Length: 252
Image (tube, rainbow, N blue to C red):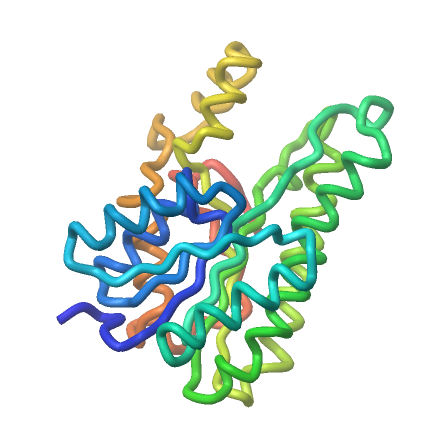
C-alpha cells in the first residue's frame, strides 16, 4: 500500500514536465490525482498513464489565470474523488528577458498565472484541506539566487512572491492541519529543453555548476520527493523552500 493511499491530490500544469512527473509519482504512492491544465490531450495522456499503472486520475480543463476556471476545476476534482488532501501549484507562464525587453503584458501574465493563481487556489482549497488535514506544495525557482540576475529579474520576481505566500500560509494555516512548503526544482521539462535549445552555451554553463552534473528527472527526482513530502514521513516539515537541483542553489 502506498504512503498516500486514500489521499486525493490536485496538480496544476499536470500535462507535461514537472507537473506530469509529480502527478505520476503521487499516483504511484497511492493518491487519486486530479490533473488540471489547458491542453486536454496532454492531460488525458497523463491520466491514461496513471490508469495503466493501476491508479486513479481525472483530467480537468483549467486556465489558472481565470478565477472561475480555478474554482470549477477544484470543485469537479473534489466532487469526483470526495475530498482533497494535497494541492500542488505548478502551472505558470514565466516572463523571461531583460527588464527593458519584458513588456507589461508578459509580466502581468507571469503574475496572474503564478503568485495570483497560487494565492487564489490555496484559498479555494483551504476548507477542503482543513477538513481532514493536508498539504500544499508550491513551485518556485532558484533564479533569485543567481549572482547575475540579468535577463531573469521579472521571472525571479514572480517566483519569489510564491515563496512568500508559501511561508505565510505555513504560519497561518498550520493550526488548521495544513502544511505548506515550496520546492525549487531543476527538472528535464519541456521548458528546460526549450531553454537549452535557445541558449545552449548558457544552459551548458549552468548545468556545469550542478554538483551532480545532471538535470533531475521530473518523476524520479522531483515527483518522488514531492510524494514523500506530502506523506506522514514529513509531517513536521512546514514553511520550507527546498531546492531539488542536485546541490546547485544555496538558500542560506
